[in-house]
Image (tube, rainbow, N blue to C red):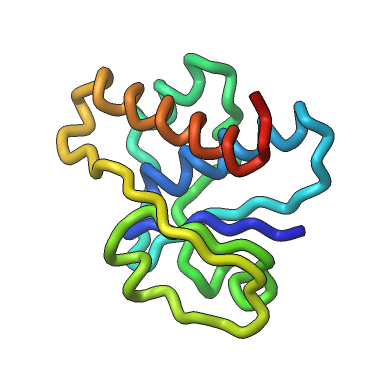
Length: 134
């Protein structure tokens, strides 16, 4: 099973979702390949995003913003878009078995760690619900 999270820049929401989903799926013994990408990827993940993920033990050492072409987008089973831009710019493929759009607030001020923590916690709740983990 391949799961892809797509956001605008591929550096905040989708990277958070990828890191959280990888840990949660491993802890739940789910066999999944999990990827993230941006429709307009940045060059790097902001340090503040790495900081709030590490606070809860999420691994981000190998994470980086990627484009749709750098992940197995066409072969994904589940696509979850995390921004309106991602929803509108991610092509629909017949090969995708499921497609969802999660409405997540875009944290404009990345120095606001409380807002990033709130976003992280919201993504955790969404993934927990997706994986049916409680």
